[in-house]
Image (cartoon, rainbow, N blue to C red; front, side, top):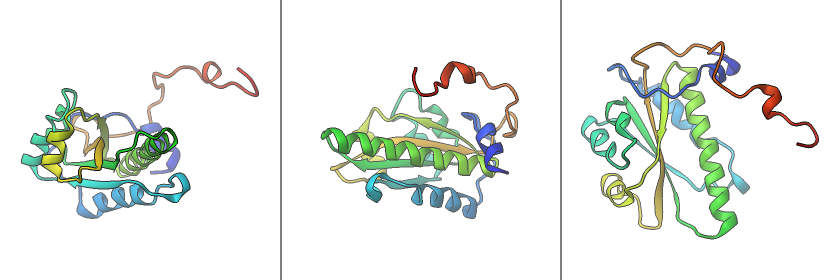
Length: 171
């Protein structure tokens, strides 16, 4: 798939077929996350990939809106250092956003659907994934082949118009 097609095809997919993701495709998606640019090239992230069904089912309970994690073929946890300092905190979150989009676009390029989930129960997440106390699980990115329809460019996405969101020079 071309980059523009991947951008136009990516949508939140929360219903997955039982088809697994090939290990080499999953590694390529993880590599896309690893090579994502980061603030000052600090790369303050780690990625935990889960494919075990029982673990995915348990992980789906870290937030009320994470039920789709249980049926995903794989889920990637984005782990980052805890910090309350303004710039460091904000740049970590910015970097995690960039890594998230890299994961989702790489997945879309292979026809793999994705959807994110927040994490409200950090203690449960830590017990399930074993990340250190000085870290937090920022996001979960569920991956799987869409159950309903394949990823194809969306002709008329439900988005604000170009002229409504683009301002040139000033608001």
